[in-house]
Amino acid sequence: MFDLGAQLTISARGAYALEEAGGDVAHLTGFNELQHQIYGRLRELRRGGSWTLESFLDGLIEKAAHYGIGGDLGWAVTVSLRDMLH
Image (tube, rainbow, N blue to C red):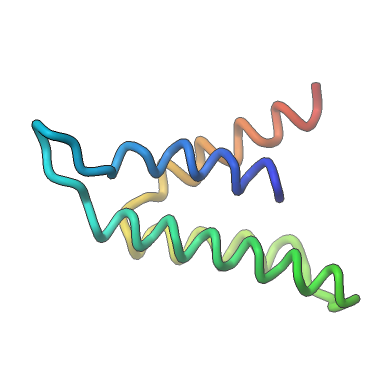
């Protein structure tokens, strides 16, 4: 989950405001919401809480779809898993 959070910060950079283009506040809000979900689950783990990977991913997918960043989430999950397995 740490890797996933890190990859999402990379994806979020695409929504930054630049001199030649305005930023995308809705997308940045979505990335923030995903980060909130990830760190909330990490806190639950530390406290001994129980949850399923399926419920965690379902929540992330739902929020990402709402904010129009589903592709970014998919990329971040793919890269995180690839890095974890190699």
